Amino acid sequence: MSQHGTIDILSADEPRQGAYTRVLPNGTGSEYQFTLQFPHDAPEEAIAHQMAVVDAELQAVRTLCE
Image 1 (cartoon, rainbow, N blue to C red):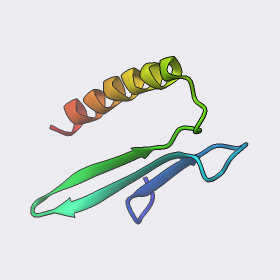
Image 2 (cartoon, rainbow, N blue to C red):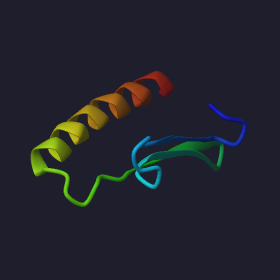
Image 3 (tube, rainbow, N blue to C red):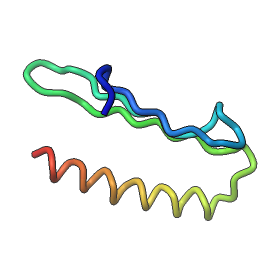
Image 4 (cartoon, one colour):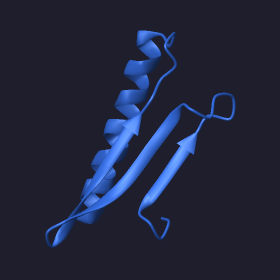
């Protein structure tokens, strides 16, 4: 994790696309913000598969943080 609470994972082919993550303070805790961008022509099946992977990864992060 960076000192600023941000990690961006960008596409080598298209650096304006990728995953952008932030850890934001919220009272005595924090919130995790995750934005994932797909190419405009990405197949729906590929998006659905990636979202299932992201869901499992975010559940793992939540379990580790609680």
